[in-house]
Structures are given as structure tokens and as C-alpha cells.
Amino acid sequence: MKEKAVASAPGKVILFGEHFVVSGYPAIVTAIDMRARAVLTPSHDKFKIKSGQSWAAWNAEGEQIYPPPPQPTPFQPLFNMVLKIMEDHGVSACFNAEILSEIPGAAGLGSSAAVSVSLAKAVAAFNNIDMSLESVIHYSMLAEKEYHGRPSGIDSHITALGGTLVYNGPRKCQQLQLNKHPSIFIAYTGLRRKTSKMVSYVQNFAAEKPDEFGQLSEIYSEIFRRAVNALKSNDLCSLGRLMTINHFLLRCLGLSNEKVERAVEKLLEKGAYGVKITGAGGGGCVIAVGDHELFENVSGFFPGFWKSSTGCKGVDVEA
Image (cartoon, rainbow, N blue to C red; front, side):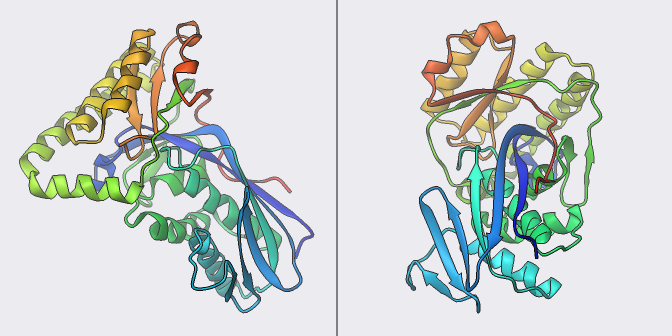
């Protein structure tokens, strides 16, 4: 057991293919330069997980002691993941875990996966466990399933592996080798949404309107093919046009709303090459590509606005 362990993992944006990936189509996802960190220090008699002003605690036997039962805690999926790691590797050392995240929650940027991946890696480092990236992804998915119901696995994979991935399901992903990773602009609409609800909505759409969903999926397949080529050639104009078409498909699936469309229109008005929802939709963030000077006066329109690098490093033990 170490005196301190720190691990970090990046957020993500889905460049192409959210929701279609749940139905078996490939998506393109990239790690961004916002990170979540898990800082672990020893505790004598309890496990504590804290983020901001919120926290929860369990005794050495794994029984919740704060908040007092039967009050639920949003940290329970993370602690269940920790218990499984300790059970599988025969360790039991208590600790305090502080989560320090730069990634907005419920915004389509992979916040929960970055937290679970960084915590899993920090627990491994704290207990001197040699944990493979495949195992880190496995444990993260345990928490993600509790949080989101039926996640595709794309968030856990990209935040663990980093870079830019073509993702077509667990154990079906590969790094997209690019000469240059494009910078993107991320605009937060201010609308929080629940991923599991949006995923269920689209799956119901696909079941109730299979012909329409099939037609949209065929169009998406061609978008995906061209997007890979645009990324490899660093053709931002083509990339932007394809992003906007992908956004139109997501809008057809019912994943946009008036506030999202105002954000898209504002960015296009300011000269973006293309804009789309990223993540589950219904709010969260939209992403854009374009020249930097075209965006100088747009940030005040959004509750949050960032220029981000892509293809960033995956999970990393920092101490």
C-alpha cells in the first residue's frame, strides 16, 4: 500500500456516430485535454469518496455509513467497482479518495467514465496491483452500467486508451493513426441530460421505425467512411460538412431541441466549418471545427466554451 496514489484520465468527444454505435455501427471518438483525477490517501477505518462538497463513506466491511442509510449516494456505483477490484485482487486497505475533475458532468464529455477509469487505476496503484488497460476498462464498465443502463463502452475505452479511436464495440476498436489531430471547439448548452434516457429513446425509435432508422443508418455509414478520409488528410472543411450532416441525422432521431439548434446556428453564423451534437444529445455540448479567429466573440453566448486538443493521452498514473 502506498502513502498516496494519483491517476488521471481524459474526457472525450464523439466526432461521429453516437447512438448509431449502440446499434452496431462504427463511431469515431477522441480523447480531449480536460481530465479527471483520483487522489487516494490511507484511512484507518473507512472508505471515503469525495468530489467537491459531496461525499460518501463506508466502513471497513463495506457498509454505508454516510449519508445515513437508506439515503442513496451517487458514489455507490464507484464504490461497488472498488469493492470488486479489491475482491478480485485480495486487498482490503481502506482509503480516502478525492475526485478532482475538469470535465463538466452530464454534458456528453465522458465525465463519469473518466472518473471511474482514473479511480480504478488509482486503486490499482495504491495497492501495487499490476492492472492492464483491458482490466481498467472492465472495471470502469461495471460503474458505467450502473450509471447509464446500457452504455456502448465507447467512453470507458477512449478514456483508458486515449488517442482517436474507431470504435465498433468492446474489443472491436483500433487507433486511428493521424498525422495531425484537429483542434475542436466545445460549446456547452447549459442543458443537463441523462444518458440512459436518451439511449433508450433512440433504441425505441429504432424498434418502432426500423425502416426509417435503417435509412438514417445507411447515410451515416457513408458519412463515417468519408470522415475517416477527412481526418487522415486533415481536411477541416470536409470534416465540418460531414459533422453538420451527422447532426442532421441526430436531429431526425429527435435528439435536438431549440436550445441546441440555437447553439448550432450561432457557431455556423460565426464561420464554423461544421457543428454537431456530441454524446447522448438532448442538451449537453455541441462541437465545431473552424478557424480560431472566427470564434473570438462567440464564447459569451454559452455557459461554457472551450478550444480543445484531441488525440490526447489516456489514463495515466501521476503518483
